[in-house]
Length: 217
Image (spheres, rainbow, N blue to C red):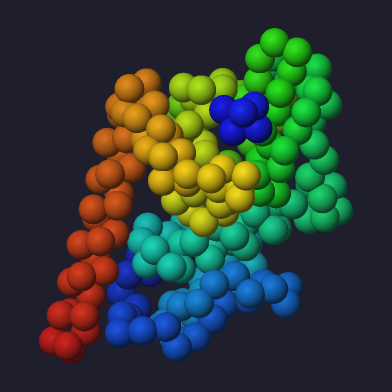
């Protein structure tokens, strides 16, 4: 579509008035956040042996900023553990031999074949995809695959939301591109769209109520 033009961490105190800290992994900046989120990142990573994917599996709630940071760390760790630091572009796909391949983010590839194509996400990167997004794809030889057009829109939307990928500059009208993604998802994957909207509303509600809770302490 594109290339082809219980343990709950929520009990920790939070400060939402502004970003006053940052999180890093392997010397790379993962994102700006509050001091409370930075402390939580360190605490949770230590509790899970430094495995970001395990933190995402075992804990129920994160602020949107901390969740995005952990997802980036999980991608970097998966990239390193798979092939010593680099995900190799697939040579074959469920649709045939790969003729063109574009890396969306480590472990996620937009592929084209002679007649068809789609997006292939390595299994190690699955931790950063929501359960609703994973249900829209199908498994094949170490990847979760998404057919071009209808299914592909889901994984592109997911990566955009998580700030793991951005619309390339060659797309001049980025707003129109996003709207086409949304229209495709609403048409072909209404359950995913409802899950996405529900998650966004819950995150916004948590963000708006956090200052009041903090003030009441």
